[in-house]
Image (tube, rainbow, N blue to C red; front, side, top):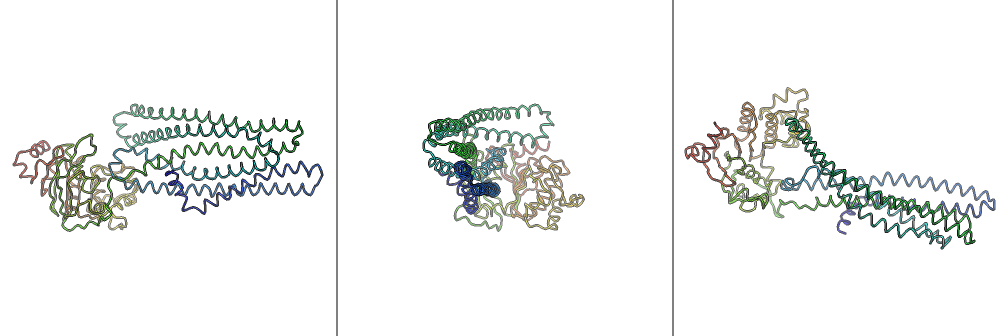
Length: 573
């Protein structure tokens, strides 16, 4: 019931369009009832009595009925689908907006292909239901009620005979409607799995080819594709039984009407024109029955799709702003971690355990340690990409949980190791740093990031497409473009996450120079595998298994001969 209310809430902005479509459906149904009645009167009175004038009027009325029904059909198809498209658009907007609110933790456990399936296939099915289901139900009910009222007026025994298959039809539809709902949900799930497999294969095509793993990747796809094939075969098994039974029961209408009518004529209970009229009414009744058949099938798919839609919409963000959250105000840029603990999953144990350190505003602090020590996780807690389990993180004395997420992240520039570039041009990618940046400002940022001359030398300049995930740029160019984005953003706090770990020496040198310029006058947290790049940091924090084990300058840590010294020597060697 709750889902039903949620579904119909999407009709509210389009109530006028909804009722316009419904009125057209009702009028179309009412008109369909008149044609058999006119035919009966034509055979009963006007033809036997040779009343030509009445016959002509009857023919004109029949033509007008068909013309009006054509007009109402146009309204239903055009404006009814407009209604469905509007509902689909609003649902997609709400789903996309909701996905933007969910934290990294949700995406860590959710396949992109499944989300894409909900965003496209499921919402298209919901749009079809939004348009067709209310319309089909209204047309079917109005036509059936109107037709049977007239049929009972003409002959109660004949009407009772023709209604015999109805209870069986309803029972059949309800029984197999439930089965179809289950198989449609199963098919949707397997479609999402196939989408996810294809997406992984396309995104990782370089790895697949470099390891000559086409056959291995093909086996993975074949497995998910075979699961989809089997689920679809099961779906069509159910559909075949359902439609065969419904078709046979529909044909019983003609059979029972003809047999019953023949017996009634033989017994002089009705006349032959009554039988003709009833056969025409059976044709009228069969159309709404066809609609009800499609309605049950479509509703099953729509309910399954809407349930998948609400599954995502019902996921509550695990990171939210407090009702009284205020805007973050950064003056000095002092950062403090106090007894911070964090766990991704309780089954995996603590990733960060009782971490405490201070970062003085305007200084550069490096976080180092072995792979898996918790360096990136520690940095990701500052912009609240993940919520800490206990302890506190403050910026200029303001707990990051007491300020709005938007203001917090506006004040932090994050340069990541794996830079993500959108499949657009350089200009569009730079505007993520500053949406209203001018071309002049963009080139200033590019120059500061050691990339200005390169972009000026491109035939299309800022309009140059970077390709999906920036495949048309080198690793160093992508990193410098991401730094240029941060120059445009101009935040007081920087996080530089292992951004040079996979680059050649020349690219590393250019990026290091760009970062040095960017960090002037800002608070900077640097994470690096190559320890030679952070020798000049004001302070170095050494992590091991999620705990701070050493702090100090490069010189003091080397002199201590501890964990940092061993890491540095191994790196240098």
